[in-house]
Image 1: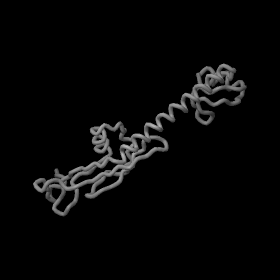
Image 2: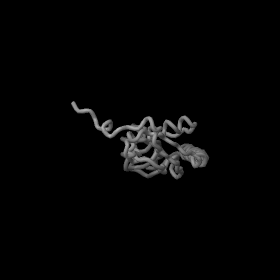
Image 3: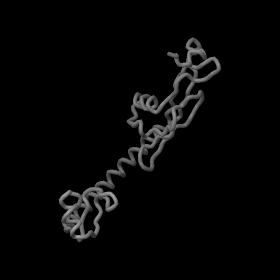
Image 4: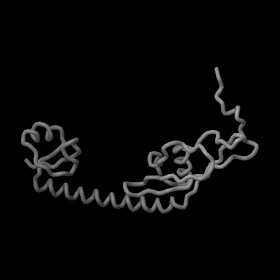
Length: 163
């Protein structure tokens, strides 16, 4: 029996696919649960129109992501962090901090898009990748520099309090 899947069914089909399945499987499982509908000519036309609209939407999202990626290429974020006398950074710069700074600059970037395995804990410049869409990424420059001289942290301040 030919059916059109309305939504994804694990290990069977993805939403929008047309497949042949056993009639009993369709009647007893797929139809009652709302996973699929019979593949009538009207249903096939509806699915085809839905797939075209989805492809158009994905193309528009991809174009928007490319535009954002072009704007992000120009972005360079600088974080001033306190340092020890030996130059070690006190604290770190995480994806959340990067997300907040990008948000201040007007970029709608989710923190899950920021590809940062571990927080940045050393002085200097580092490139960070941002996944904007399936095939669209952008790299931004993150610079960590020492805070003003009066804010230097002493080695003993770094150690956690005992007790």
